Every structure is written in C-alpha cells, then in structure tokens.
Length: 326
Image (cartoon, rainbow, N blue to C red; front, side, top):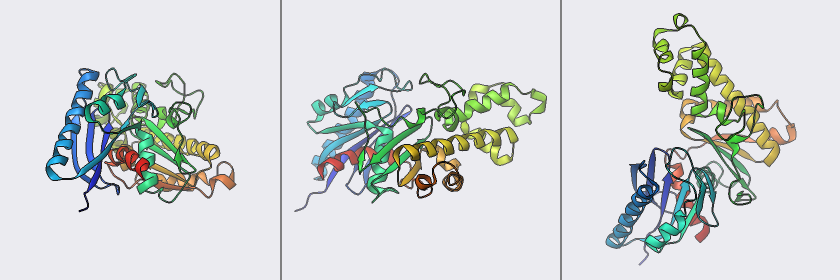
C-alpha cells in the first residue's frame, strides 16, 4: 500500500506564521495561520513546535508520512547550520536563533532553513514561472524588497547564506537612508515601507489647504499612511502619488537592469504582496528595460509575475525538503 507523504512548510513573518502540510507538487493538505507572538523568542518557537507536533499526531491518526520540515524566515540565514543569524526588527529577539536544532530535537525530523525570499525563488524554480529554467532572479515586493537567485539550477547562498539581499543594492547613492545602513537602496523606493515614506515626505512639505480633504486627513496622521493609500490615490490620478509610484517603477527598472548585468538570467520573477497593486508592472518593466543596458544581456530576459499566490512562501519553505530528498 502506498502511503501519502508530505513535508511541513513553515513561513515565518513579522505579523503571522503559516504552517502547512505540502506534497511534492506544492499542493497543500492542511494549513494553519497564527499571529506571530510578540512576547519573546521562546513564545514564537513554542507556537511553531505546538503546530508541528499537532500535524505529527494527525499523520499518525490519518496514516500519512511526514518526511521533514522546511522553514523560510526573513533575515540572514545560515542554511548549513540551520541558524537565523540576523533576523528582522518586526520579530522580537530573532537573532542567532538555532531553529533547526530546536525543531529537530522536538520532532526527530530533518529540518531545512533558509531566507524567505530564497524559498520563494526555490518554489518558482520548482513549480512556477522559473520551472525548466536554470537561471532566474526573483524579487519579492512587500514590506521590504527581498531577493533570491538561482544559477545553474541552484540557489546562490554566498559565504554563510547571506547572498541575495537584492533590495539593498543602491539605485541612488544620494538617496534616502536605509535601515541597512546604506543610502538609496532599492527597498527605500520600491517596498511598501519605502513607497509610504516617500509619500509622507511629500505631504509633510505641502500646505494643508492645497490637499484634497481625504488626503489632508493623513497629513495630520502621517504614521497611519501606508502604501495601500498611495496606490489608491494614484488610481484617482493624484499627481504626487503618481510620481511616487513612477519613481518606484523606475528604481525597479534600473535595479533589474543591474541584476541582469550581474547574473545573466533567463527570467526575472516578481512576487510579494505589492504586485497585486501593480497588474501591469511586469509588462511595463519588460518594455522599458529593452532600451537600457547591454542589449545582448537585457533583451532576451523575460519578466514574469508569480502565479503561486499568497501561499508561495509556505510552499517554497516546504520545497526545501523535496529539493533534497529527490
């Protein structure tokens, strides 16, 4: 009798943690999402352990097999040691976390850990727009800008796993300060955080009387402004919002040309929560990059939008297990 086999995928974010049972085709059998605990590192790890152990009990009851655990998290990850070296400010005490050892001890299952943008790239390479391609660059556009690079069919990890911080390449050396310590990073223009901040900067310097009423309200509460409002105002034709989004697109265009020059990929894949606001983003970039940079490198490259959906991070995390067992 054949036994159905699944891996456990864990996608750890600043606001939520998603845990699911995923088969080798990327299909999800069960999924559970919970808010990321804010009390302590221990509370986060205990929450993850509890969900994983509940899935293991489920497997015993329902007669399927779990062959490993794959984790994707923001930050710089050492996949060889299974340690989150430097995490994200959105998750409390998320530095030097030996998450692989913690879960292996709790479950006796093999555990894989990587940066969440790398796991997204792995999912795209295995199941998405990068399937059957050996050279792809992936960008995740969300609260920040993440990146993952597949070269010769394998993820590039660098010295300890920190490669692929593509959102922190400089697109304007005189640009705004970035939380990474540099200036003018792609993330400061093309992330949700960056777009909202550029709009706040604009509103702060505008007379309130010159603003439409629904926008003037935000001038008094700038911290409440998010990229969602900026995209909405852009659709309404509000010129400063149009300018902020146009600048974000231009930063992406020049950033992508630099990535093409660096990695010589077959395709660029765009994912993350912001792409839903930019239905024509891939087509716009594809059209404009053709006249920028080295033609022999740039013109053959395809620009795609991911079609894996909101569960791409979860699926990609789980794919680490299947990537190694096959």
